[in-house]
Length: 231
Image (cartoon, rainbow, N blue to C red; front, top):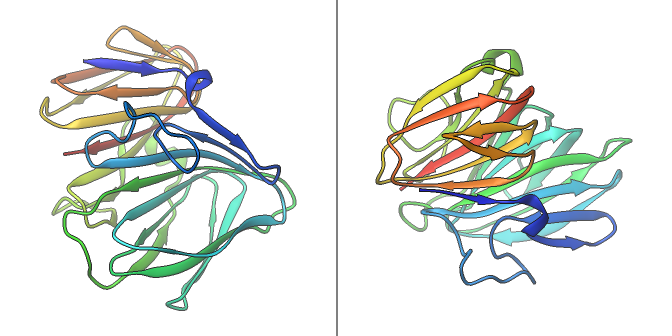
C-alpha cells in the first residue's frame, strides 16, 4: 500500500519568519486521519528566514531529527550543548525526561530543513544531543542510515525502533530497497521527481508506505530522498 500525499494538500502556516508545511497534524493544523505514521509523529518542512528562529522551549519524550537541506541551523540547549548543523548534515535530540532548546538561522540567507519527530520506545531517560556530517557524495545511488535505534547501525543514535535514511538518485537511475511489510515507511523527495513502484512523486510530496516487501525507486530527474522506517 502506497498513499501519495501531495505537497499542495499538506498543512501550512506562514508566520513571516517561518514558512512551515506539516505532513501530519501539528500546532494549529489538525487532521484526525494524519496524526502520524507508525512511530513517526511529525514531519515538518520548514523555511526559516535569516537571523530568526525558535527561542528556548521545552520538549520531553520525543526523538527529534533535523535534516538541513539549505543553509544551517544553530542549536543551544539547557544541557550546555551548542552546535551549527549545515546543509546535508543531521542533528538529533533525544528529549528524554525533559530538555529546553533553541534553534536559530544565523546565516545571511534562508535555511530550509526537515524536522522529524519519532516517538521513543520507552519514556524518560537522560536527554542528549548530537550532530554528524553526512556528505551527499556518500549517498549517491544508495541509502545511508542517518539516525537509528537499531543495534549495529553506524548512525546517530535515537531511542526508537526506527531508522532515518537518505539517498540521492540520478535521472534514469533505479534503487531497490527491501522492506518489512509490517513496518511503516514514509518517503519524501527533498528535491527532484521520482517513481516508487510506479507511483510518481514530486519534490516535497510524501509517500506513506506499508505492506510492501520491496521498493523500486527510479529517478525521473536528479533527486534527494529522505526516508523514515518505523514500527
